Image 1: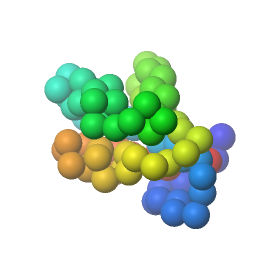
Image 2: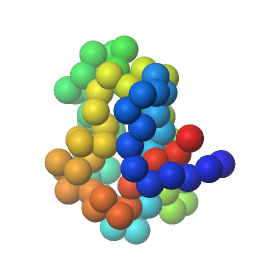
Image 3: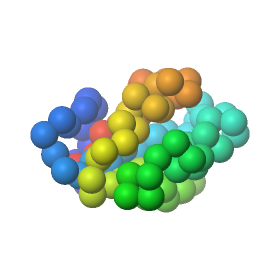
Length: 82
């Protein structure tokens, strides 16, 4: 898998890998609860691994990157996958 740091604005799909070393339990709960703030069509798939979380969507209507920054996830811990 290629990993790119940054944001792709001209894509209908997106994915992020968040390194979990610096993620608090409160932030993890907010990541899962992003669905409360969105319509079902905007929900992101969330897969937890040992040392990272993978988020993906086919339609990136919900701005997950900004949401992650707003809940305090360090920008250095967010990797854009493709």
